[in-house]
Image (cartoon, rainbow, N blue to C red; front, side, top):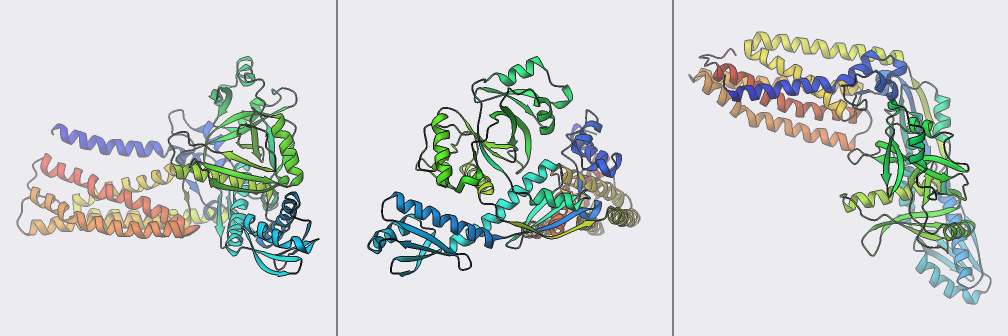
Length: 590
């Protein structure tokens, strides 16, 4: 056997061993740990061997397989729109009075979403109407009756507000649940005004309802930059335990504590902060996987909270004249005065924007900001694209509005899925998969003899690759996902059936073993490739348009098809070609 065969077989062995290695966290999570510990990633990290992959690369079980809580929350966008119209009326009245265009009062009709501006002096109404419609473009004129203007929100702005209200609620809910430590949480939009939440492994509906229904707290707090070495001194004088993985990092010249475990970081820094200061954390986002934190870093902020999101009246992402993403924020009159005082006293310092005790960003204060309006420039440092930076600006705007304009959220449905049912589904689903796999293996071995055995080896590797692929993407396996798993195994077998039948046809034409194998694989390739690609297209459509179980099925299907292409075209061909070419066989057992 020449070196080429060693290299090809080495590749297959390496893929197999790598797949088994990657499945270690999944094995420990689902087999070694009991149900109570299964969702606790900290426990899993401690139980894993030192040579194993990180605990986050594991296959999770969905709500239908391990039980938990299913919730549907309804976002009251109507009430949120009514409150927004009322606030907007006060802003417009304040703006008109500050501009000295005249004196007006603002009233609203909540049911019709109408805003009535009444001028004390009717002679000033023409100037007021012109200025208001030019400045507040989110409102349009419905009618005018003497000294009273009747305005209504722009229909496009109303639809946008409804969508953003649900997005804001989803952001707040996800952040709160993440703090609860549910690793496999599924939060998704349902219809136009509802949010579907799945909490696998949880068993207390009342606790979940209280957690999700609480309004988020947005705060503006000053970062303490007067003692930049406080974390360095803390790290030196009281070294953290090794298992906490806490390190000392540099950010904009300030030493900060960093750790992949937020709770461990906060526990270490507890009671070590200077008097009048709090230690908060900021998520270091994963550049590849959205909504995933690869680490947390510390911030030292003033304990005093001078300004909260209750004073914020609006926040929008836009693009500056320098073609850089930015976030424009506005405060109500009382908030504007507090913000002006805060920025005047804090010029040159950083101000932390905190949501639920998490620092989202900490921009520098370059100058005193009056008028109740401010701009947070995002800049474009690093290798990320403009779209990524703009997306970050839009997320920050949602964070700000989530604390400022929380739409009321009510529980539409909440139910508990029993763990016993989940165990029964796992047993039946696994039994079905194993029985189907065993029958296919036996059939292939009998009908195609040695070629069938080679196909069986590829089939087993295909199954392992599917599980490893799902673990790599931290996917959640549901009952439809098991169906997708079984289906992809059938597709993988079908590819080998096509290849073996092609080889039989070539042999029946009197061709040699070598020629039959080569031409059999070559002529079956495009048929297999076309079938897989067309099914992949359907899988991607299901993934991007489906929700819940449909998406779980699509995920398994996509990963399985990619694994099937590799095992049926590469793995079986290498093994079959070795036995025919490498050993100079005169016949093919097929």
